[in-house]
Image 1 (cartoon, helix red, strand yellow):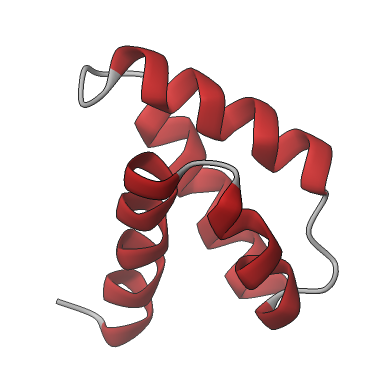
Image 2: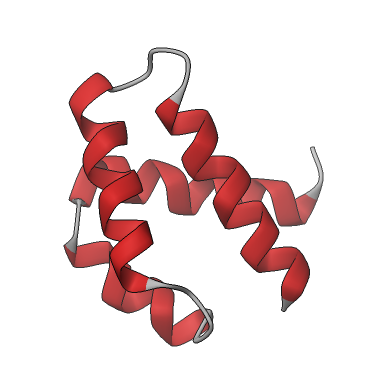
Length: 69
């Protein structure tokens, strides 16, 4: 697996497990991140856990932030 993708998937897993608390740590690494959008995506991902859809949207958003960095 690509190292960058593994890093992003680790963040997604952390967001789902820890929730909003992980966002502050993420923003330190990715200062351009929109905290409100992340909060919404994390809450949606937590609500449906690992079903198709929102966790994948969260992953795509995190990958876009990583590529823009």
